Length: 163
Ligand code: 4NP
Image 1 (tube, rainbow, N blue to C red):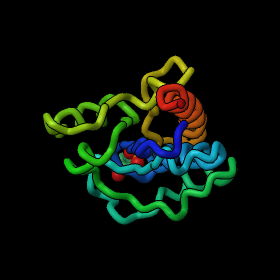
Image 2 (image 1 turned 30 degrees about the horizontal axis):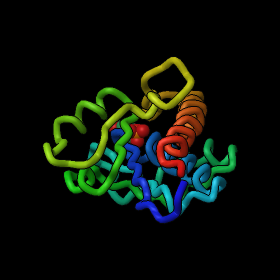
Image 3 (image 1 turned 90 degrees about the horizontal axis):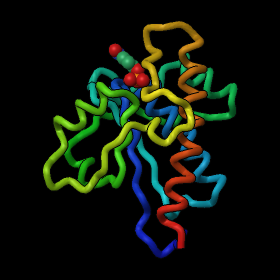
Image 4 (image 1 turned 30 degrees about the vertical axis):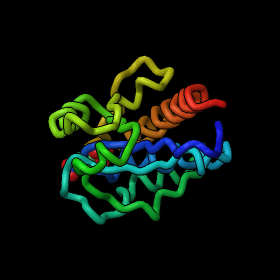
């Protein structure tokens, strides 16, 4: 990947921006740093809803993430905006409901490509399930799927921007 190129800007989106998308933000950012690609790929996350604007990630999520070595504590929730479609190259939704909300607000001249995050994963599931109202296993499931999708996304970006 050439450092002279403009960075590829990736935005992860879920409903609240306190469980799934901040996890993707932290996990994928870690992979980008390990690969020394921080000048080539920038990462952010947002929610379609406004209930948690300014809040840190859910404590259950930060605790499960910390056990795997990911520190999400500095992240704060924000709501996705129309400006994001002009700012980001790739907007990745955690589930089909997030994707349809994004499609409904997408401006016709926006530059961002929209997809489901797990399009990049090996796992044969489409969506990262919302863990908010479930038990602790839901947060482990989020981490498993996010790690899978993040590996695939990094490989895809490395192959499309190589050289
Ligand atoms: P997230 O999870 O979309 O993965 O951040 C949720 C967080 C909060 C709510 C729903 C889902 N909520 O209803 O407040």
